[in-house]
Each structure stands twice: as C-alpha cells, then as structure tokens.
Image: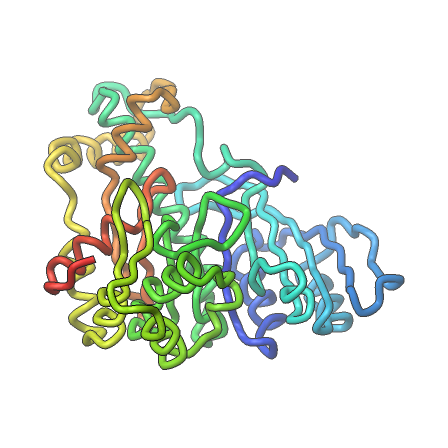
Length: 346
C-alpha cells in the first residue's frame, strides 16, 4: 500500500487497544469481507507473523488477541465502504505501549491505500446543474468532509463503549498539533479544549502528541501554566497562540466553548452563494441524471476549498464531539473565531 495521507490517529488506554482495533474493524470492514495482516513484536522479534491474506474478520481478531503484548505492532488492510458510496482500501495499525513509545504514532493509526481514494482527482457531476469551478469544488469538499467524518467515527466511536479518547486526521505521517489537523475527535465534549493544550505542549515544549494525548486536564493545565506569562507559539500564516488564551480555554465552560465553536462554523458568503445549487446537483447525481466528468485538481478548485470549505461541529449521541473540515484547511481558523467570540484573544 501507498504511505500517502491523510492519516487518522487515535489514542486509547493500553487495556483497550485490541478491543478498539476489533471494534473498528467490525465497523469498517465490508460485511463478509476479509483482511490481510501481519504481526511483529520488539519483545519477540523472532516470532513475527508473515503476511496473511484473505483472512476473515473473526480470525484476524483472534490472531491479534492471541499474540498482542506491550511490544506488538499489528498492520491490517481491508476494503471499506465510504459514506459517498465508493469502496477503498484502508490500513489500520495497532501498537502496544512499548512499541508506541519507541515509534511514536499513537495506539491506533489508519490511512487510505492511496491519497486519491479520499481526495479524488475527478468527480461525476450531473449535467444541467451547478457547473462552475466553485460548484465543483464545493461538491468535492462536501463529499470528502463527510467521508472523513464517517471514517473517524467508525474508528473512534464504533459502538456504545468508549475506548478511544482522542483522535485526529492530519495530512502528515505524524500526529501533530491538533489545531493544524483537518479533524479531531474527543470521546467527551468537555475535553475539546485539549486541542489547544496539546498544540501548546507540542509547539512550545516539543512533546509528541501521541504521548501528550494521554495527559489529564489538570496535568495539561499545569504544563501550560508553567510557561512564562506572555509566552506565545506560532500557529500558521503569522498567527500566534498565547499561553493566556490556552489557560482561559481550559477553564472555560465546556458548554460555552462548544457553543462558540458551533457559532463559528457558519459558512461564509462565497460558500452560501453556491450551496443551494450544489445540493440540488448532488441530489440529481444520486438520482441517476446524466453526468459529466469534472477535473477537480486545478489551482482554482484547491483555492476555493482552502478559503471557503466550511467547518462542522458534530455532537455525537454518546457525548463525543467531532470538529472537521476539508484536508486542504486546518482547524485553526475555527478555533480563532471561537476564542474571539468568547473574548479570549489568541
């Protein structure tokens, strides 16, 4: 498989790692489908399983449970259906605590077989509907964001049991600052401010996010508070995040913070101008109308998404929350607007 992104990282306790993998596989693998996998270990390097292909889901999970230790690394690949209807190949890695400590990447990591599986180069779009660069870009942005959100929920929150506490989609093969990701997940909406604290300890102190993600709120608060007053870290495009802004966000009411994020997720005027016609075109495409093939890789398509793709704050039924946008954007503008609404300067 290709090693291209986007990459989805998730953190869970040592005791939940195999259970989290098993639940994610059950939610992602096409019903009746098979997996390919291998298992290796730094504890027992001579006991590495060679690649096994076309193995049933139950056999895959049983093999992982039988051989999983703190030093284990599992790699599994399989076909999964996207919410947009396509079928792609996905790989999931599950790492024991000792393996993850030596090769920091998080307890769970998922990625598509190829970047174009989630970020297609071409789309089939209904004739007679909205037909412009802006409309084509908006259709792409909607499809990709919905697919990414769906895959994130199926990996991080596949059922009623909370195993994964935090997750992030990123363009890079490393779990970096959450506010530079295109999507994050928290099993509890009350911990959404951790995105800012994890960003701080990564950018200011150099902590690797896979390790910092396990820190409790009071520990993160103490880490940020230990920085000198007025300390700041560069975020993107000349923007900075201050120590004081992170501390205020950590002590803000979770309800108020989430409400501010939702209020900041309102689409801009350029997006609203095309949205209605785009939704009609998507409906016509799904209904089987004649289509044309649109190349959605031009610089104009990319720029429209970079500047105008909306943000989505999704509250999950069991109390979790997902913040998401298209991978061409980051979550920082959403956070900056939310902090401003709360009177917190970044």
